[in-house]
Image (cartoon, rainbow, N blue to C red; front, side, top):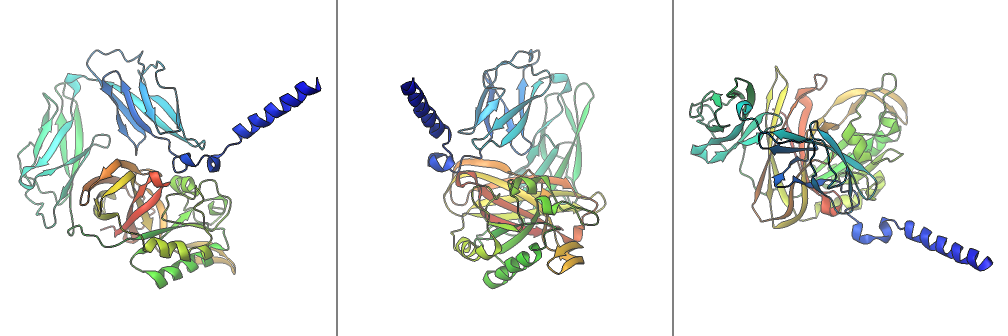
Length: 445
């Protein structure tokens, strides 16, 4: 009996050791432990359209298709799992939620919708071109937006678009009719059955040719209004910026954690994205240098910033980013176009993230000297325009000079001071654990 017990104990020990393996003991997973994306979603020969920013998948089926008994094939990130599982029959008469779980246990939810083609009801803009400029508009079907990314110096007062819409549908203003795009233009598409859809078309002119300007480093300062040590830590970071590079270092104030939660008259600067980036840490202040989140051992104290910031400034530049925008003061509608250019040959799993930042906000902050009722908050992160993880745009290789175009839109919160708001866009690489490769800033017009 003792022998049996001894053998059982040995087996339990072995089982414990196997189950206790963590990411440090499995280095081949490092850099991928947080990946949780749907990479492909198909039903037979119908390929789903994945919107990574919105976390949606759309399947379009021929007229008359019964979508109540479909067996999708789902491909997700390496080491991740998905529920419902690939190959399991689902009723897509209503959208179905699919949950992807990363190796580290974090999750992402995708809403999958099945659309059955109805020719009588089709009312989409399929193509929107300015032939004279060889410019193809970028269509956001979900937001019913079209963005025209135009060359430097383009006169937008007499642009003649060539528009292709759904078969049988009509569009007003008509294709081939000149329009003044100094302000966004509304195009109405009417289906055969008389139903309509409105698209907002915005012309965004590049302000200057895209040339490499050098690496810009992003320091995320994870702070809180009730953190007495945070103001001095922020001051340390800004002093470091003054010493090393005013033009190529940006400090983003991300309010997250328990000490950022508003109590009484303390302002609320928390955001869902900031909370996600904070990655369940328990103290403030914390910093990271050129990483999307604090996950993966990227959390630093202020006195640990000097070496990584200097090292990041010395890195070779891989992308250059340019930002254009139009802002309507009356409606507070903000439309953004960004272009990322590969400065050299690159390879990775690249994402782009667009952020809204507000500077010079006066409010209450706890300091080592007590409450400061008129503390000036610098570069406060107000949220993203495309999610905490941004938008995937390339998983593979890009050649030197290759351009990638992006479009974002939002309605500016009425509590934000538009005169102090900035756009910040950065490119990150998930294959390097969310390392941020380049950052660009632009004041809202």
